[in-house]
Structure formats: structure tokens, C-alpha cells
Amino acid sequence: MIRSVTPAVHFGGMKRVALLGATGSIGRQAIEIVESHPELELVAAASGSQSLDGLAPLTQVAGDLTELLERARPDVVLNAVVGFAGLPATLWALERGVTLALANKESLVAAGELALEAQRRGGGLLLPVDSEHSAAFQCLEGRTKEQVDSLVLTGSGGPFRGRRREELGGATPEEALAHPTWSMGPKITVDSATLANKGLELIEAHFLFGLPYERIEVVLQPTSIVHALVRFRDGAALAHLGYPDMRVPISFALTYPERSATALPALDLSQGLVLEFEPPDLETFPLLGLARSAGERGGTYPCAFNAANEVAVAAFLEGKLPFLGIAATVEETLAEVDGAPARDLSDLVEADAAARRLAEQGVQVA
Ligand code: NAD
Ligand code: MG
Image (cartoon, helix red, strand yellow):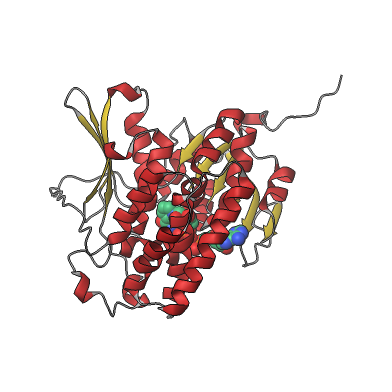
């Protein structure tokens, strides 16, 4: 009897990779990783607008990315789309039990419970690509939740670390885009300058690791060498160290559980290494606290936080909103939405759209 080859069966240990967001910062680094690992095969690639000619056997520019995934039958989907637009691909992979290497944190923040339900049904792996979450995942591997006391997410603090609120009124997109340690796409770079990125990461960690918010802490570590720390109930703490280079968590996720070799340099301690930690300034960077409270309130508050932030960041980058207006827009939006839990994807899409409308109005008034 001739049987069709299912996506889970592959010859010679090859892993079929679908890369969404292939032209972006994560996407380009992922291509480098795929090219350097012979066991990885790029079977499909997608972007939002730029052409992808010849990059993979199947390519798609914009449109419904789940159509591409249906055709590609990948073993692993690397979702490196930016923003809520990445949600259908996240749910597609989780629902089908196809391994999801997730850079697109916005989809998990917005869809939280729905995404986890899809993963439970699908039974596949959800591997974080976000560096802090990849680090935490590695520190947590093989332990039970009961053993964990708390999780610490680290952040560089962005280009405005140490500044006070009064000094940021005139902060320009150019200044916000000058990140001290990471080179990334524009949206996440602005999120790093406002600390909205750590806020999104806090919610992302809550869903990924099933920890309550009071057991997730955010600490600044300005050189971005320590990516996360887990404290255990016996008083021990494990940390994950490395140079700030996204190719490490990308390679980890794509080659999991093999942890294949990369050509990237190992951590050099021969010249000494000083690690400094400091608490984030929640008054100057209110988006971190707003994200925490949106996460704690639950329902579609995280979805609204994300939607309003996307609208506000886009307006800031277009010069239509001052830097401090980003947090103000998000705060006002969160005060107006109902935050009711989403029963399904259409509820969630509606909550996202409602928050976007409110945020757009806020931006026009500002
Ligand atoms: P980027 O702006 O550099 O790239 C975004 C990619 O998504 C591009 O290829 C773009 O064409 C594509 N895209 C945008 N809208 C799309 C749509 N509607 N349909 C299909 N494709 C679309 O962004 P980035 O910095 O690579 O970040 C991507 C994701 O990874 C974000 O969610 C970000 O938060 C996360 N992330 C990035 C980094 C980093 O170092 N860049 C680190 C951690 C997490
Ligand atoms: Mg991160």
C-alpha cells in the first residue's frame, strides 16, 4: 500500500522550516542559521511587503500566511512577523501540533489563553525565540513548577535608561531607534525605549511558563549579557549568560532538542566580566506597569495593551505622536475598553480592532 508522507516524517533527519517575516531582523538572522545547519531546510518564506524571489520553494508576500503553511507542511514554523498580524500563523501551528518557534510575542500576548488551548489540543512544542524566554526556558528545562520560586526577566533599559520623564518630552524616533545593545526592527526597538517590550515579555512569560505575575520580576542589566534568571525554592538561582545575539536563541529553537553547534563566539571571561543590575524606573517608563496591570486583569486587556501600543508606536515613528504620548495613548485606551475575555478568535479580533479605534482617536487628539 502506498501511503502519503506525513509532515512529521522526514528523510535523513531533515527539518522543514517555514519562515514568516523572512525579510526582517529576526528573519534575516534565521536565514543565516538555516544556511549554516545542513539538517534545516527552508521550505517556505513569507514577508509583509518585500519580494522573496528564490529564497524558498514556496514564498508569499502578504495575505493569509496560513495558506502558505498549509501548502508547505513544515516541521517547524518560525514566526518572526511583527505585531498582531502574526496571530493566525501562531494559532495554525499550535492547533496542528507543528513545532512553533515564536519570535512574534505580540500574538501570544494578545491571544494568551486561546493560544494555550490550541497548544493543548495540538500537543506540539512552543519554543520561545525571544532571548529572555529562550534563556528562561533553558533554566527551567527538567524542573517542575513547584521547584520554582520566581523568574527574573532582564532588560538593557534601552537608549533612555537613566533619563527622567521631564527629559523625554522631545525624544525623537531617531533617538529611540538607537538601541545600546541589540540591533532589531523598528517596532521592537521603540518598545525597548519605552519598556513596553519588557511589559509584553512579562505577559509572554506568564503564558509560556504558567507563572503568576507576582512571581515574575523585571530587572535591568545594561550590557544584556544575562538574559534571564530563575530562582528556585531551595535558594539556588540559575542564570543564562551570553552575548546579545539573536542567532543563539534562533538556533536553539530551530535545532531543539539537539542544540546544534554555531560558529558564534563563546562567552569570554579572560578580561573579567562585571554584571550590574538595577530596578526599572516605573515612573519614567509607565508602559511596564501598564502591561503588568493589563496582564493581571486578564481577559482581553493584554490584547488591548498590545493593540494600543502598536498604533501609538506607528504614530510616533511617523512623527504624529510625541514619545510620552505612546504611554498616554495606551493608558487611555486601557481605561476605555471592557477587557471581556475572548471566547474565540473572532472575539479577539474584535477586541483588537476596538482598542485600535480608541487608540487612533487618542493619537488624533494628542
Ligand atoms: P522587523 O520589522 O525587522 O521584521 C518584521 C517582518 O515581518 C518583516 O519580514 C515584514 O515583512 C514581516 N511582516 C510584517 N507584517 C506582516 C504581515 N502582515 N504579513 C506577513 N509578514 C509581515 O521585526 P523584527 O525585529 O524581526 O521582529 C519580528 C518579531 O520578533 C517581533 O514580534 C519582535 O517583537 C520579535 N523579536 C525580535 C527581536 C529582534 O532582535 N529583532 C528579538 C526578540 C523578539
Ligand atoms: Mg526579548
